[in-house]
Amino acid sequence: MVEKLLTASRSYYIWLLFLLCVIAVCGIVYLDQLFNGLGITGMNRDVSWGLYISQFTYFVGVAASAVMLVLPAYFHHYKKFKRMIIFGEFMAVAAVVMCALFIVVDLGQPQRMLNVMFYPTPNSVMFYDMIVLCGYLALNIIIGWVTLEAELRDVDPPKWVKPLIYISIIWAFSIHTVTAFLYAGVPGRHYWLTAIMAARFLASAFCSGPAILLLLLFVVRRLTGFDPGREAIKTLSTIIVYAMCINVFFYCCELFTAFYSNIPGHMEPIRFLFEGHGGHLAWVSYWMWAAVIMAIGSLVILIPPQWRTGPLLPLALVMLVAASWIDKGLGLLIGGFTPNMFEAITPYMPTFKEVMVALGVYAVGAFVLSLLWKIALSVKKIAGHFSD
Image (cartoon, rainbow, N blue to C red; front, side, top):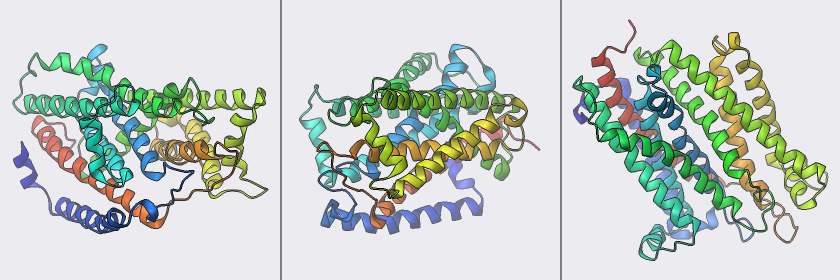
């Protein structure tokens, strides 16, 4: 099926060339980091995790969100999702690739990641995180490719694929649960020290991941005419709004626990995120308030069924994705490290070079996704899933 990449439009190749140019430019910035160290980033002694790890955390959730299509389709035989499952699985592949790259750039020296394999430490959560991510990547590649090839030949997938699909459903929950344990298992970081961290991660993943998938499918529909199906879009948007409501509820539970109990260690990170320090708002505070406004705005649109299925749906999805990204991609790390364990304020802000390296990883993910979705769309076109 790789030959499908040779029959694309001119605009598609221009898009790939643009991504390669972004990767090349950002790759030069990464070489600067490789030779001069992590000093080019905004990280320091007190803030040892920054933009790279926050993006790793976010995209683990995007990868896990594919289960929101696979579970209804195979456990509840909801056939409306069959048309778009392959896109969710291939998006998971691209997301896991990005997760791996964010870990590589965060290590400073890439060869250090070999220590996890050469000197395994079963008592380390990072060891299990590597195992579940590699396993999930392999599962989605195998399942996606085999089922797509069966669709191309207009035959049923081999029977040995179905057990792998069931395993992938459980595996999807495990990858984000283990990632949450990386945070919840760190003592002295009050913002992360919560029993519902894994539940919060899963809830945010199951709303933001499908939202990204739907937005990308809307773009693909506009560009190619591929029709994911009205009922499938309606059902997936309903799943998104339920997951977002649970996500907001969990965050409100954290606020209640912190402020009603009046525990200083739990209150100070939240206060810093929303109120700043010493009477001055931190740069992240503007982002956090914007996330609150967009989260509320997305729910206002998504909860009423007549609005959720109308032309405002893309706007609501954009606000939802932005709100969840700010919460998990910025606030989670900064709130965890501020104040530090000595109750001191050490501000962190990503540098321009740090953002450029992260942008390069985004471009690699977009490149992988573009290749895989082009193959999938070619097969879907043969199957007649395009509108006139």
